Structure formats: C-alpha cells, structure tokens
Image 1 (cartoon, rainbow, N blue to C red):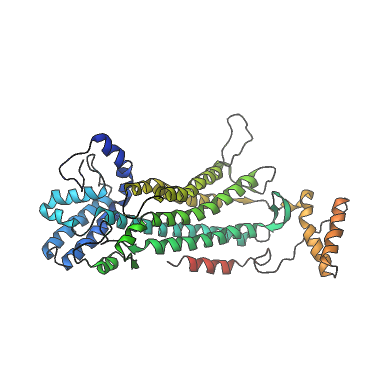
Image 2 (tube, rainbow, N blue to C red):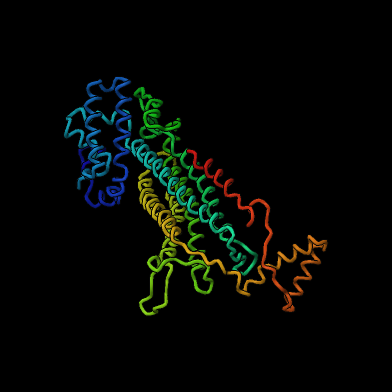
Length: 429
C-alpha cells in the first residue's frame, strides 16, 4: 500500500487493513479540500524560496487538473493507496516526477488532515445553516398562516392551557434560531488555520502561516503549534454539539407530529402518499417519515458523546484514535442534512385541523382563563383558583372558549418579526 510514511518496510496486510479502517471511503469527502490546502501550501513554499516560480506554476496546474477530476467524479482512491493525501501526492509524482515530491515540505500529515477536516467542516456548517434557514422560513410562514387556529397545550402529557398552531410552529422556528447560534459558535472554532503546525511542534522552515491563513480564507490562526493539534477532536465535538441541538429540535417536532397524527388527537394530517400503511390493517396511515426523523435525530445526538469518549484519556499530540472521528461525525452530518430537508418537505404538505377545541374534552383548557378573568374583576388569585377548582370538581365548570393573550410571545403576540431578526443575527457568519 502506498503511504506517505513508508520508509522501506511493509506492515502486514492485516495490520494495514485494521488501521486504515473506513478512511479510504470517508476520505473521498475530503478530496477537494486536500487539493485546496495543497495549493495554498505550495504558494507559501514558493514565497519562502522552497519552490521556484516555475515549479509553483507546474504544481498548481497539476493540482487544478486533479481538482477538476474530483469535481467531474473521475477521481478515485486506488486500491493500494492508504488515504487521500497519499493519492494526491502519488498523482503529482507520477505526472511531474521529482517536483511532485516537493509538495510535502514544511507540513505533516497531521496538520494536512487538520486543514482538510476544518475546510470540510466549515462548508458543512454553512450548508447546514442554509438548510436550517429554509426550514425556519417554512415554520414562520406556517406560524403566520395558522396564528388564529387554536391548539390544546399539554404539560405532563395532560390537557393544560390553550395554545395555537401559530405558537407551536413559531416555537420551533425560534428554537432553530437558538440552534443556529450553536452553528455560528462551531463555525468560528473551526475557522482557524492549523497549517504549519506540522506534526504538532512546528517546523525549522520559515513558514508564512499568515499567508496560508489568508489564502484559505480562515478568519484566524491556531497560533500555538501544540494547540493546533489539540483542536483535533475539539472541532469535531463542537460541530457534533451544534448539529445535536438541531437534532434535538427536530426530534421533538417529529415526536409532536407522530402524536398529533394519531386519530385519538387528529390535530394534523398529511396526504396519503406521505404516510405508510399496514400489511394487515387497511385503515392505517403510519407516520413513518416522522418516526425515522425522530430515530435518526437520536443517532445524531449520540455523536457528540461518542466523539468525547474517543478523545478522552490521550495526552497531547497526535494519536491514531483521531482517525475514528470521521466514522462518527461524517455519517451524522449526512443524516442531519437528510432530516432537515425531509422535515421541510413534509411541512409543505401539512394539513391543520381548525376545529379541535369544539370538542368538550378540551373545556378544561380554559380553567386558567376563567381564573384570570375573576382576578381581573377584583377577586384575589387564590380565591379565584379555589372557586374554579370547586366548579370543576362538581361538574359545574362552563368554558368560555376565548383567549385574550397580548403579552410578548403569547398567542396574540407571536413576535415572529423579532424572531426573524434573532435568526438573522445568528446566521450572520
């Protein structure tokens, strides 16, 4: 197997197979970023005299050709090549000879993979942000559309107080705004340049790390070479935490939808083609999409904990354990994109029941409204609470099914415009 670290001896096939693991598959996601990082690196090498202008031109052209092959889907990781870094360097050496071998001066595979992963995660965070913004707009639109349609509110799984579809949809929109703050935090942590930290202790070459920072569009440096290596795992954990917040929001929303679709509730429905049936029960319309979203979001939530466990108990510096982080985070990111997109797809077809509270089973939603009316009329709160409670116990309570909520964030004052501004600020990265 072709490796960057080969010194003339060969590991047994069983050791290579075990240590490489899924890297060869997962590394394909990093291909274009490896080329991008290499292009910045060789420009810097030329600026400090480790490459000539002619060599830079030759290498840049060859890297652009490889990048084009990646974008056209023609790039492959050969069977006997260990990882993406080895493949790119191998192609350069085949095509350019000794010039291709010069590309690795001043860096280690340790900072090379850090750059690749950070560039990849940076794009993934931006992609996730844009998908969340799309879902946010759908939820806000539904909140405005159904702001006057009442919905039972529950605490402890019991009928509690009046709510509305406007309040329900709007709540999840604002939750996504909070989740986007987490994306922003992860983005700023990821968006720092580790290139030049080499194996974790810098280099005797006079590397211009500020130059590669500018070329790669990083907003700052991982300055300390050891700290740059300490960011391995921390970046992945931050991203996992951020998408975990989104997953938690979608998980709860999916659970709501599963419950509300049940005929015992009948609050919402979807076209038949978006539900599934039973092999023996012809009446069934199962919420399989929402159940899969709910389950996959639980899997995403587990990623942060798994990353934390992989990264614990190691002293500073690089360890091969870090390779396993890709096995955890990369699939979680794929699931996150699917869940966000599918949630938006389903919401575009949601049907809302606008007569839910006509049923007498929801009369007790309005006990607090009645208590508050009596308080506004001058009765002390505890007396009003007791008098309504007695009426409920004696079966004499009569519900006046109207609400007069006007405070910020209530049924009658959703503040969707302010929530949109909160999201705008959170998504500004």
